[in-house]
Length: 249
Image (cartoon, rainbow, N blue to C red; front, side, top):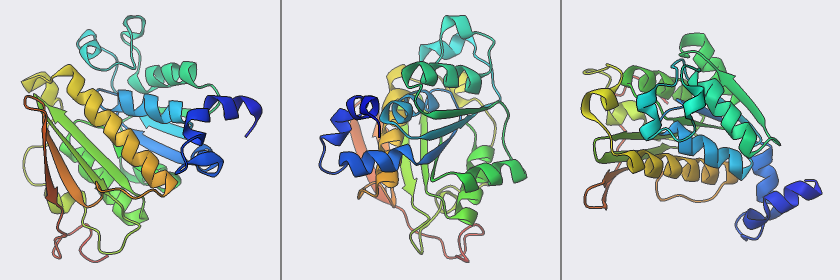
């Protein structure tokens, strides 16, 4: 690290669990963020600010006025811009010292598999089940850890799947891919603005802990937040031995 980095990341370096070695580990890491909306906004900002050396963010959508109620990475002068490109502009303003890549498309198939294989951790910040399941399959196939978040109305959820650990259950074990797969639940049901900030920030925190090799109580659990009461519920994730995605691993 050069002198400016030592100053920029000094509050991380002061933490014994991180120190210089941990910050250097972050600077050499690569995080893939799927979705530059409500969850991807705080997640991307905190990953960039924390010094994750390479950040790839994917989104095929464009910034709309209704997004600005909660998608804090965007601004009024970005209306109509691609969200991934808008997010990269904001993250570059925050930290020009890292490598930022915008993928202005809905990634799937071989393209998604290749992007996941390049990453050290994947954050699922999207808003539809089809993409969530595709990302999960790619992470299981490559063994890349996955941090999944969701938020709608006043309800948030967080789950961490560390596929480097043998016999880990996957997203499909928790939510089979039969059923509703339509996009845009926020447009249908609404979402409390700070809720996505809470969940997205927690996704960034768990991703950083995975990159640093720090222990996490979130791994192997589904955490549910009731935004009205502020109460959390936690459920242990159980692997389905008949799961068509991870059952043979």
